[in-house]
Length: 400
Ligand code: GLU
Image (cartoon, rainbow, N blue to C red; front, side, top):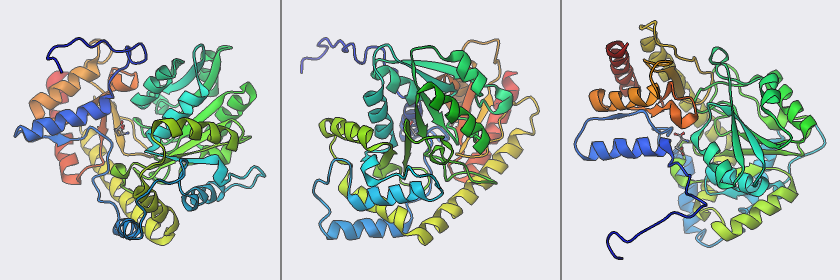
């Protein structure tokens, strides 16, 4: 290749913003490699190892020859296990079947498949905000328009029916839901969820419900849209093994929807990646079917996340000027940066200061369309989380 040869991105990606969550962790890794001592609370990645029973199942699958292509939408036992899980608490007649399940390379691909298959030019998609950075970009890559609907921080940024109604237009085609939420950790109650899903049903919107943090909830269990929707007709529920089972690198996610939409997403995936990695599908199958081992592993990890959350909150609350949301799920703390309301992109300034001066990596809230805020992941070693929170409080005090 000629050095300096010109490259002009196509119109498809000309406006694309790089993933800020990924960028922060890459930067933290680069600084560590350069010899700096960094506490990385950037990317939301559990520090736990994948539970041993899952690794053993994957090793056995390799030995048994699980090294070839599978069906594009995934191996049948895994799709059946996902469908069975989806029907567990459901009393209605519209049962999920394996034909409505598509297994993909991480829930990120499932979300992208759904956005690209459902939305297009002229469509608007409501995104309760703050929300995970990739929702906005995925909707844009489908050449639809993401419409941020910013919730009220006093309600953990959760949006109401009235807020969604106010943001809707005749072009509204879809709604992204995410409970427990990344980045706020807020969890919608069954009533709140039902009210929103009923509105979407009445308006004929597609709901993409990202439930990747569903099993990571504190106090009481989080509710799935599958169980609160008045109809499962225009619903796509996305989940995966990455967060609850500490399996980020295995890259297995899935979508649950109608067989018709599932077939269209499968056709799309057949031209992009084909099936998700075969051995990873077998690992996910173990995570979903070896229930006793899986439940014990998840409970143990969730209990440790909860301890870290409480320890981190206790330290942050020693500084009363820090406005931090108390999360009921996921593994993030969302807090208002010093200079919020007066400084442009206060969150980015605070995150940069913290990385530079205190060696702590966190994600600026601009990634989630709320630039006054910052996100801290506490899916890291507890002593490190506590040390990072002490440094954060000190930095906050320096800047206010
Ligand atoms: N979803 C995680 C996060 O928000 C992992 C990184 C990513 O894919 O964005 O940090």
